[in-house]
Image (tube, rainbow, N blue to C red; front, side):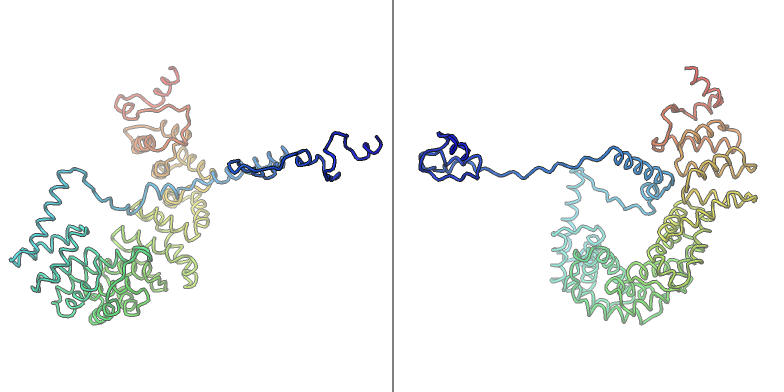
Length: 500
């Protein structure tokens, strides 16, 4: 019995004569097995599960500290009433052109029939019909295989020079830059008349603009590229920058080779011209495609921003300044000059879309904090013109904090100049400030007889259409037009609503 106790087993724990290890407990099943074990191949194998890792519980103090930290971050983020996202979403300067697609099967049938008729006219024996068909196919812009194969076949078969010229031009417009087309284009540039050369360069410029705008891995190979660059260099340097063909050749060179010296020199000579359109096109090519940023280019952009009569060119100039970046501007020692011009355009620019583009440029160049400080100090000036300019600037920059918001709200109530108060209303409308304080203040001033009241009516109608994320849920919707027409005052309408 003692021996049995020391062994830690009972007499019937295992059969006699089998080896057992007293260190293993419990004993393995093979100790009691009398027949050899045969594993069934259909039996599922046992997968050993990993040990579950129980996460360490955090104390309630740490959880509460994290909640307070997150709340402070959200409060800090919401304290700045920025409108950058609002501008980019609702005031895009140049929205992409929506290509109209007609799903009417009858119209698609007529379109296919028209293309088939034009393709059939390419094989006509009348030269004028062939020229017209080639021109029409290029203008329609259909790039399906049937149209391209018909034009390429006509280029191989036809021997008429006018037809070959129009077929080549249409193929280039459709983006076909294969070897046969490019060699024919080079021949047309060498032996064609000046008018034909200008027309062909314009078509090539359109095709290369689309080619350069695509990502590099999606660009098709341009056949005879080195020979084409040589011809374009000769055309760009043969005449002055004011010549249309010379400028188009330089633009094509900029698309093909961003480091081409001939294109750079020709385009830089255009910066001193009085033609604002050509000057703007040269700036776009130099900054966006050739990645150049010199003092001359920055000065030309500032000149366009200040003096160009076309609002689109002024907005493009501001966008190109943001493309250049602050570091390049600092390298040319023009940071102060650029900042002063941008600060002035925030209130002197008549078009809102240009002011908003300038505001985004100020933000990209990390000058927004400085602009906010200057504008906030201008709100306290005694001169009414300066106060009004500061309010216009805030309409483009946005409000830096709640203190400025309540300052504008106070100016709406107490400012001595009516033009300043009207400008505050316009700024609230531009920024979409449909908060309770703003809506109630505007509602109290609705009057169809005075300019201030009429501006309140316009602002309230615009704020009703804006997203109601900041609107107080207790403030009911109202129809300003009915109150104005019926002659019921806003105070009376509020009293009627409260009585309900």
